[in-house]
Image 1 (cartoon, chains in turn green, brown):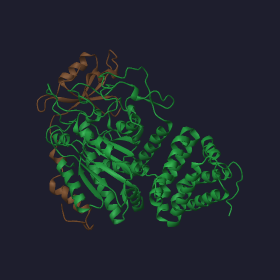
Image 2 (cartoon, chains in turn blue, green):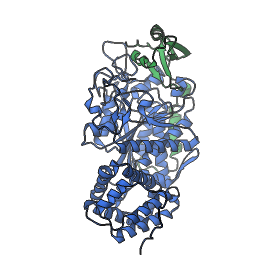
Image 3 (cartoon, helix red, strand yellow):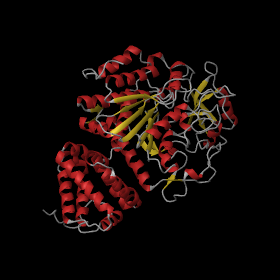
Image 4 (cartoon, chains in turn blue, orange):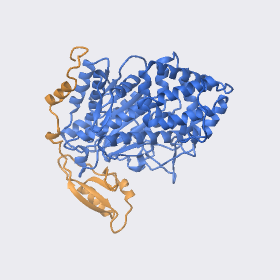
Length: 494
Length: 104
């Protein structure tokens, strides 16, 4: 069962009216081609300024009906969990109330349940297999632009499933951002902080990430889409072209993608596949590639990790796959995947920084160390991966414990101070304090899945004793976490 | 070549898969025809196509297998939530949670 555009809008209107401390509803700057308002919701709990943001978009392709419903229902699920302190359970997977509290109190969730309302209305009332928006293309009877080809990343390059023909169902439009619906999405990305992005489509049970136009490679940074012509109405003219992606970003897409897949699988065992978009088929001008591409085209912009979900399995026919008679289970899978993405977007260092520090100086310094040093070597990236793996299960416990969170803040502060001076030394009290903290964390129940990681951290901390911060960083960049103890270790002093 | 529009209520539309055929025509070239491609469970080429589009595919040497008619018709009313049901769903979900302000 599926909601009409008016019913979707009514839900967001009621939520914002009834619970304004959680929901802010706003019309995006431009009405759709046919004059319908397009609404977004911001969902958050608690006070404070701008936070890390997750943007979730649905309804880009009109006939993929279940995703706008899933997004608005997820908004309600998250709100109810936070407001009533209840867990969220989808099938065999449960997120504790504390998990959801962490999401709503540390992130801004920007939801656009139905970015293409004209298309959805057309599906409901005229053609249930319509894909595009309802643009009246001039000098032809063919209507519509494929909104997921209209974004400004290699726009108009007809690689694979992209076309400059107005009658095509993958028509990219007369120019990049020719459509108000796509300009609306750009507007949110321009005006709000969005660190993670997902455009939710159907079907095929996929979690996709950049790039859509070419395979990725991590060795030749000169191969960037910014060097290729756009608007050519021809395929990429470079034989064997492969798009550069920094190894750190590739690792991030792969690890987050695999965690999303794992969360979905835990609901009822559906085996989604995480892979680059081009594995489905080649595309250009897509929404999630655009979200990720923005910081490359304009280095002043924030990096946004962009994903596309393709929810639901093949159901025997295209119509039954796009809008099955009962999408309940598929929506549950989709919501699990979106929650997993939200969790992966949380940054423990930023959470601690926002709570304890007056400025972003410490967070900025540690981010610099991560991105400019650790991310440049395989061993360094292994340490980043370890941190990202361990932070989520531990953060809920940590933030609920005043002493632990205070200790964490002190460590972050000291690490940032050390990072600022290459000559500063890791004193015994630095190492001992950090080891005590890690050992305390190891004892909390939530640490069970990351205990080996914590042991690896403890071992390395011991090895860093007395080193300058420069040498300590060199060590981390040269040697990945050791899963087993090479020699007998010294205990923490004091 | 661009595909003809399937006029709502006029032309027939089919769900079809496309295969290289006896002439072993590369499937990648199907993209040149600008047809409405939908995901295929076997990662093959599955399309929603009109009769004219089928003719174009056959003329290029492809083998086209028709699986079903995909009529140009509105979403079945059975798949649509009615207004009362939509409101009742939300009220049930937030039942017991005090509203912060009056109804919008």
